[in-house]
Length: 426
Ligand code: PMP
Ligand code: GLN
Image 1 (cartoon, helix red, strand yellow):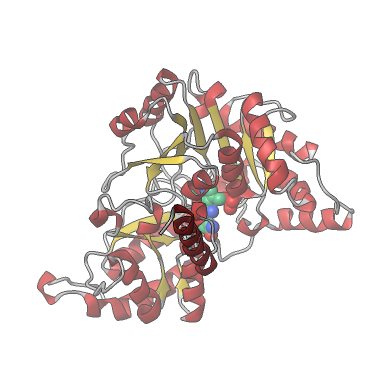
Image 2 (tube, rainbow, N blue to C red):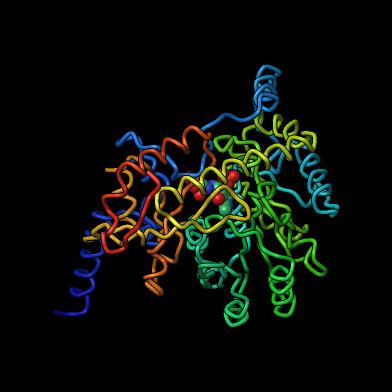
């Protein structure tokens, strides 16, 4: 076959391949989000949904009423692309209260459609194709997809059970001249870790020594139980190299509102805004208006939020222990991890964590998240560890947590190997 015919054949095969699988390769590897899949299964099997992290209770009336009032008052057109001026001011004021740092609301804050859009805008605005982004496994699933959309390369490092300490040595080794960003998340989804001052200062030192930027995902900033959350941006030398991301969703139990923001020094803010203006241009105007009232909430709102979550965490931990799990104790966020190893479910073609979650949702009637979804898709490194855990969300009312417990106690026992001689408090 001559060269031209060979190329034509190759083109034909590529064409057929694209026809059968039209999703661009930068996204095809990620498939459907695990949260969408597990919520669908939960609905189909009428399961108690402890999978996707959304509260099953409503946000506060003072925020909802502010949203309704904003719609009635005519906040119905595009907002300024980088945020309603009064919202940028409220974010700056709240950030100052929490961190002691003064930021310029006009030049250092960008309002986005949830932190998810902020993550994408950071990657698209700052990462050149081929540059590396260090992600810490297990990680929120939108991080690697956003890196890939920007043409960047994920360099995974890993926190290991049982303590999920920050892998500082791995970080030191992973940083190269190609490193563009180090992305951290604290309080952490899914482990529940809240990074200590020592861990934060070690990370800061690596960033400073190597002149790297740090992206700090702080969406669970107000949900911590022991150690108070601290933003890495408050450490010496970090204000000028940190991009802080957060949103309204977790703090005000309004995940569907999708109001988020990125706080960054001016030049990085410009890069983020370059992407944001072409991703969504601006975020829903009445919700931005209502977000101002939310952020001006008195301190007692935040204290109450934490004490409610402490109660839900304790209920979840005792429910899981009672069902036969040995959960890792979260220091923050609204997630708890547990190994599925006390139980035995045939994996078949699935990974062990997926097989267990399928069993749990279909037979027991409880949805959880298989943690394999929080690791680099392209790698099978440390397969046993990455498929050993499942995640439960406790942003649910106490009755829901207890109902999950009743279902697990009634059914999970059947999967306990006799040899373990495991005793459950029935
Ligand atoms: N980061 C983490 C760690 C999360 O768990 C979430 C929750 N979905 C997000 C970012 C996204 O936040 P938002 O819903 O504001 O887009
Ligand atoms: N952050 C939520 C979780 O981890 C869900 C986000 C989503 O559904 N995309 O469960």
